[in-house]
Image (cartoon, rainbow, N blue to C red; front, top):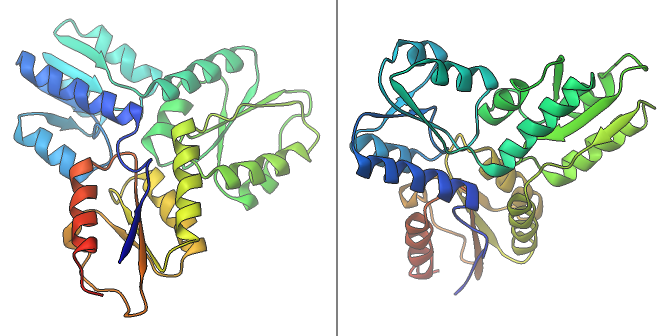
Length: 284
Protein backbone atom coordinates (compact mmCIF):
# COMPACT_ATOMS: atom_id res chain seq x y z
CA UNK A 1 0.00 0.00 0.00
CA UNK A 2 1.54 3.29 -1.08
CA UNK A 3 0.66 6.66 0.47
CA UNK A 4 2.10 9.96 -0.79
CA UNK A 5 1.80 12.88 1.62
CA UNK A 6 2.43 16.39 0.30
CA UNK A 7 5.48 18.02 1.86
CA UNK A 8 3.67 21.37 1.84
CA UNK A 9 0.56 20.05 3.63
CA UNK A 10 -0.48 21.80 6.83
CA UNK A 11 0.12 25.16 8.50
CA UNK A 12 1.72 27.81 6.33
CA UNK A 13 3.92 30.53 7.83
CA UNK A 14 1.10 33.07 8.20
CA UNK A 15 -1.31 30.63 9.83
CA UNK A 16 1.28 29.26 12.26
CA UNK A 17 2.24 32.81 13.22
CA UNK A 18 -1.40 33.75 13.84
CA UNK A 19 -2.22 30.68 15.92
CA UNK A 20 0.99 31.00 17.96
CA UNK A 21 0.12 34.65 18.62
CA UNK A 22 -3.23 33.72 20.17
CA UNK A 23 -1.71 31.05 22.43
CA UNK A 24 0.96 33.52 23.55
CA UNK A 25 -1.72 36.04 24.48
CA UNK A 26 -3.65 33.37 26.39
CA UNK A 27 -0.57 32.79 28.57
CA UNK A 28 -0.51 36.50 29.45
CA UNK A 29 -4.04 36.29 30.80
CA UNK A 30 -6.96 38.69 30.53
CA UNK A 31 -9.97 38.68 28.24
CA UNK A 32 -9.03 37.79 24.65
CA UNK A 33 -11.04 38.23 21.48
CA UNK A 34 -10.29 37.46 17.85
CA UNK A 35 -11.92 39.55 15.17
CA UNK A 36 -13.38 36.73 13.12
CA UNK A 37 -12.07 33.16 13.33
CA UNK A 38 -8.27 33.40 13.63
CA UNK A 39 -7.97 30.77 10.85
CA UNK A 40 -10.53 28.74 8.92
CA UNK A 41 -10.29 25.52 10.91
CA UNK A 42 -13.06 24.49 13.28
CA UNK A 43 -10.85 22.26 15.43
CA UNK A 44 -8.39 25.08 16.15
CA UNK A 45 -11.14 27.65 16.78
CA UNK A 46 -12.90 25.22 19.12
CA UNK A 47 -9.71 24.65 21.13
CA UNK A 48 -9.16 28.40 21.49
CA UNK A 49 -12.75 28.92 22.62
CA UNK A 50 -12.24 26.20 25.26
CA UNK A 51 -9.31 28.26 26.51
CA UNK A 52 -11.50 31.35 26.88
CA UNK A 53 -11.02 33.11 23.54
CA UNK A 54 -14.16 34.76 22.15
CA UNK A 55 -14.74 35.22 18.42
CA UNK A 56 -16.18 38.58 17.39
CA UNK A 57 -18.34 38.07 14.32
CA UNK A 58 -19.23 41.65 13.45
CA UNK A 59 -18.21 45.28 13.71
CA UNK A 60 -21.24 45.82 15.98
CA UNK A 61 -19.91 43.29 18.50
CA UNK A 62 -16.53 45.04 18.42
CA UNK A 63 -18.14 48.44 19.02
CA UNK A 64 -19.69 47.16 22.25
CA UNK A 65 -16.35 46.13 23.78
CA UNK A 66 -14.81 48.38 26.42
CA UNK A 67 -11.76 46.35 27.45
CA UNK A 68 -9.65 43.34 26.53
CA UNK A 69 -7.21 42.23 23.84
CA UNK A 70 -8.48 42.07 20.26
CA UNK A 71 -6.42 39.93 17.88
CA UNK A 72 -6.74 40.55 14.15
CA UNK A 73 -7.23 37.27 12.29
CA UNK A 74 -4.70 35.90 9.78
CA UNK A 75 -6.89 37.01 6.86
CA UNK A 76 -6.55 40.67 7.87
CA UNK A 77 -9.32 43.26 8.22
CA UNK A 78 -10.29 46.56 6.64
CA UNK A 79 -8.73 49.85 7.70
CA UNK A 80 -11.83 50.99 9.61
CA UNK A 81 -11.56 48.01 11.99
CA UNK A 82 -8.01 48.99 12.94
CA UNK A 83 -9.18 52.55 13.50
CA UNK A 84 -12.11 51.41 15.66
CA UNK A 85 -9.92 49.27 17.93
CA UNK A 86 -7.30 52.00 18.29
CA UNK A 87 -9.99 54.56 19.16
CA UNK A 88 -11.00 52.66 22.31
CA UNK A 89 -8.68 53.23 25.28
CA UNK A 90 -9.59 49.96 26.99
CA UNK A 91 -8.71 47.78 24.03
CA UNK A 92 -5.30 46.37 23.14
CA UNK A 93 -4.70 45.62 19.46
CA UNK A 94 -2.61 42.59 18.47
CA UNK A 95 -2.20 42.17 14.72
CA UNK A 96 -1.88 38.55 13.60
CA UNK A 97 -2.58 39.33 9.93
CA UNK A 98 -0.50 37.30 7.50
CA UNK A 99 2.39 39.50 6.27
CA UNK A 100 1.52 38.56 2.68
CA UNK A 101 -1.98 39.99 3.21
CA UNK A 102 -0.60 43.15 4.84
CA UNK A 103 1.57 43.62 1.74
CA UNK A 104 -1.57 43.65 -0.42
CA UNK A 105 -3.18 46.24 1.89
CA UNK A 106 -0.19 48.53 1.32
CA UNK A 107 -0.25 48.04 -2.46
CA UNK A 108 -3.98 48.79 -2.65
CA UNK A 109 -3.66 51.81 -0.37
CA UNK A 110 -0.77 53.30 -2.37
CA UNK A 111 -2.16 52.56 -5.84
CA UNK A 112 -5.65 53.81 -5.02
CA UNK A 113 -4.19 57.06 -3.69
CA UNK A 114 -2.67 57.54 -7.14
CA UNK A 115 -6.23 57.45 -8.48
CA UNK A 116 -6.05 53.93 -9.90
CA UNK A 117 -9.07 51.67 -10.19
CA UNK A 118 -8.47 48.60 -8.00
CA UNK A 119 -9.44 45.12 -9.18
CA UNK A 120 -9.17 42.24 -6.70
CA UNK A 121 -9.26 38.75 -8.18
CA UNK A 122 -10.86 36.58 -5.53
CA UNK A 123 -14.04 35.75 -3.62
CA UNK A 124 -15.86 38.91 -2.50
CA UNK A 125 -17.43 37.01 0.43
CA UNK A 126 -14.06 35.93 1.84
CA UNK A 127 -12.78 37.96 4.83
CA UNK A 128 -9.36 38.42 3.26
CA UNK A 129 -10.88 40.06 0.19
CA UNK A 130 -13.21 42.20 2.31
CA UNK A 131 -10.19 43.42 4.25
CA UNK A 132 -8.27 44.24 1.06
CA UNK A 133 -11.23 46.18 -0.34
CA UNK A 134 -11.32 48.20 2.89
CA UNK A 135 -7.89 49.71 2.20
CA UNK A 136 -8.77 51.34 -1.11
CA UNK A 137 -9.52 55.05 -1.48
CA UNK A 138 -11.14 54.42 -4.87
CA UNK A 139 -14.02 52.08 -5.85
CA UNK A 140 -13.01 48.41 -6.03
CA UNK A 141 -14.21 45.67 -8.37
CA UNK A 142 -13.89 42.07 -7.18
CA UNK A 143 -13.67 39.49 -9.97
CA UNK A 144 -13.83 35.72 -9.58
CA UNK A 145 -15.05 34.35 -12.92
CA UNK A 146 -14.23 34.69 -16.64
CA UNK A 147 -17.68 36.20 -17.23
CA UNK A 148 -17.05 38.92 -14.62
CA UNK A 149 -13.67 39.69 -16.17
CA UNK A 150 -15.14 39.88 -19.68
CA UNK A 151 -17.93 42.21 -18.48
CA UNK A 152 -15.51 44.59 -16.72
CA UNK A 153 -15.56 48.13 -18.06
CA UNK A 154 -13.58 51.16 -16.96
CA UNK A 155 -12.86 54.73 -18.00
CA UNK A 156 -9.96 54.30 -20.48
CA UNK A 157 -8.23 57.33 -18.95
CA UNK A 158 -8.10 55.73 -15.48
CA UNK A 159 -5.20 53.31 -14.83
CA UNK A 160 -6.02 49.93 -13.27
CA UNK A 161 -4.18 47.96 -10.59
CA UNK A 162 -4.93 44.24 -10.32
CA UNK A 163 -4.12 42.22 -7.20
CA UNK A 164 -5.20 38.77 -6.05
CA UNK A 165 -6.47 37.02 -2.97
CA UNK A 166 -3.42 35.16 -1.62
CA UNK A 167 -5.05 31.73 -1.92
CA UNK A 168 -6.54 32.09 -5.41
CA UNK A 169 -5.95 29.38 -8.02
CA UNK A 170 -2.82 30.52 -9.91
CA UNK A 171 -3.92 29.05 -13.24
CA UNK A 172 -7.30 30.83 -13.03
CA UNK A 173 -5.61 34.07 -11.98
CA UNK A 174 -3.45 33.99 -15.10
CA UNK A 175 -6.49 33.27 -17.29
CA UNK A 176 -8.40 36.24 -15.84
CA UNK A 177 -5.42 38.59 -16.16
CA UNK A 178 -5.14 37.63 -19.83
CA UNK A 179 -8.77 38.70 -20.36
CA UNK A 180 -8.08 42.07 -18.71
CA UNK A 181 -4.92 42.65 -20.76
CA UNK A 182 -6.89 42.30 -24.00
CA UNK A 183 -9.09 45.27 -23.04
CA UNK A 184 -6.35 47.79 -23.74
CA UNK A 185 -6.44 49.58 -20.39
CA UNK A 186 -3.35 50.92 -18.64
CA UNK A 187 -2.97 47.96 -16.28
CA UNK A 188 -0.48 47.21 -13.52
CA UNK A 189 -0.84 43.58 -12.40
CA UNK A 190 0.71 42.42 -9.13
CA UNK A 191 0.60 38.66 -8.55
CA UNK A 192 -0.09 38.59 -4.82
CA UNK A 193 -0.81 34.86 -4.60
CA UNK A 194 1.59 33.81 -1.86
CA UNK A 195 4.49 31.48 -2.68
CA UNK A 196 3.26 28.88 -0.18
CA UNK A 197 -0.07 28.71 -2.03
CA UNK A 198 1.66 28.31 -5.39
CA UNK A 199 3.89 25.50 -4.06
CA UNK A 200 0.96 23.76 -2.38
CA UNK A 201 -1.19 23.89 -5.52
CA UNK A 202 1.66 22.72 -7.76
CA UNK A 203 2.52 19.79 -5.51
CA UNK A 204 -1.15 18.80 -5.11
CA UNK A 205 -1.58 18.74 -8.90
CA UNK A 206 1.53 16.59 -9.32
CA UNK A 207 0.55 14.07 -6.63
CA UNK A 208 -3.08 13.84 -7.79
CA UNK A 209 -1.90 12.94 -11.29
CA UNK A 210 -0.02 9.90 -9.92
CA UNK A 211 -2.51 8.31 -7.51
CA UNK A 212 -5.72 6.26 -7.61
CA UNK A 213 -7.36 8.32 -4.87
CA UNK A 214 -6.66 11.73 -3.34
CA UNK A 215 -7.58 13.06 0.10
CA UNK A 216 -7.69 16.81 0.72
CA UNK A 217 -7.91 17.81 4.40
CA UNK A 218 -9.10 21.22 5.54
CA UNK A 219 -11.81 23.41 7.02
CA UNK A 220 -15.06 23.72 5.05
CA UNK A 221 -14.72 27.53 5.02
CA UNK A 222 -11.06 27.45 3.95
CA UNK A 223 -10.53 29.08 0.55
CA UNK A 224 -7.12 27.53 -0.09
CA UNK A 225 -8.46 24.06 0.79
CA UNK A 226 -11.32 24.41 -1.71
CA UNK A 227 -8.80 25.43 -4.39
CA UNK A 228 -6.72 22.32 -3.63
CA UNK A 229 -9.85 20.18 -3.94
CA UNK A 230 -10.66 21.75 -7.33
CA UNK A 231 -7.12 21.16 -8.61
CA UNK A 232 -6.95 17.55 -7.36
CA UNK A 233 -10.41 16.75 -8.74
CA UNK A 234 -9.22 17.77 -12.22
CA UNK A 235 -6.35 15.27 -11.99
CA UNK A 236 -7.88 12.44 -9.95
CA UNK A 237 -11.49 11.28 -10.25
CA UNK A 238 -11.60 9.84 -6.71
CA UNK A 239 -10.79 13.01 -4.74
CA UNK A 240 -12.26 13.45 -1.27
CA UNK A 241 -12.51 16.57 0.88
CA UNK A 242 -12.55 16.01 4.64
CA UNK A 243 -12.08 18.11 7.78
CA UNK A 244 -11.00 15.33 10.14
CA UNK A 245 -10.50 11.56 10.12
CA UNK A 246 -14.15 11.14 11.19
CA UNK A 247 -15.24 12.41 7.74
CA UNK A 248 -13.37 9.61 5.96
CA UNK A 249 -16.34 7.28 6.33
CA UNK A 250 -16.09 5.13 3.21
CA UNK A 251 -13.41 2.80 1.94
CA UNK A 252 -11.61 2.77 -1.39
CA UNK A 253 -12.17 0.43 -4.36
CA UNK A 254 -10.14 -2.80 -4.42
CA UNK A 255 -8.17 -1.45 -7.36
CA UNK A 256 -6.75 1.37 -5.21
CA UNK A 257 -3.01 0.83 -4.72
CA UNK A 258 -1.82 4.41 -4.14
CA UNK A 259 -3.43 7.25 -2.18
CA UNK A 260 -2.30 10.87 -2.07
CA UNK A 261 -2.84 13.24 0.85
CA UNK A 262 -2.62 17.01 0.96
CA UNK A 263 -4.02 19.60 3.34
CA UNK A 264 -4.95 23.25 3.45
CA UNK A 265 -2.84 25.91 5.13
CA UNK A 266 -5.10 25.92 8.21
CA UNK A 267 -4.94 22.18 8.91
CA UNK A 268 -3.06 21.13 12.09
CA UNK A 269 -0.39 18.46 11.66
CA UNK A 270 -2.01 16.07 14.13
CA UNK A 271 -5.08 15.76 11.86
CA UNK A 272 -2.88 15.04 8.82
CA UNK A 273 -0.99 12.40 10.83
CA UNK A 274 -4.24 10.75 12.01
CA UNK A 275 -5.53 10.48 8.44
CA UNK A 276 -2.18 9.23 7.16
CA UNK A 277 -1.93 6.53 9.86
CA UNK A 278 -5.49 5.40 9.20
CA UNK A 279 -5.00 5.14 5.43
CA UNK A 280 -1.70 3.26 5.83
CA UNK A 281 -3.43 0.84 8.19
CA UNK A 282 -6.41 0.22 5.89
CA UNK A 283 -6.67 -3.22 4.33
CA UNK A 284 -7.25 -2.59 0.64
